[in-house]
View 1: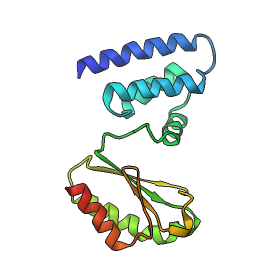
View 2: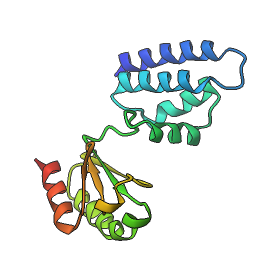
View 3: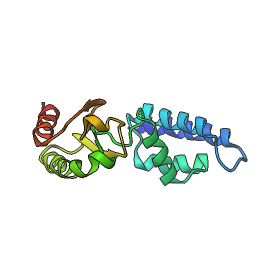
View 4: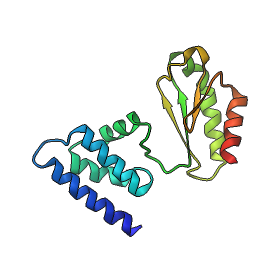
Length: 154
């Protein structure tokens, strides 16, 4: 654990120097800093975002949005990621499924899975859609949610 913090401190110092006297670090270099942080910790912990904000000039909420833009970046150390479509066609149908997912995950150990929404998967004709660890499930219903929860348990 201490080694991770030392590695992160070295990375922070490096990126702070990259920023120099500029108001903000360019986005490409900021994403590189986020990736390096994820390499160190396995994800991008909340406590690291404050330091990253200081070193890059970006505010924490903007860094969180950047993390959401890049599917390879993780803000959680959860073993699985579930993404529920909240777009126009899926959103209404997925509201009940999202509730079912959250209730099912409450029965599992902490950090088993992270659930988030995404505006649209651009698969409206096949919806409602839910993604588990990058695999997209179409025409989801209560049975699909149960199957997803079973996969996570196993």
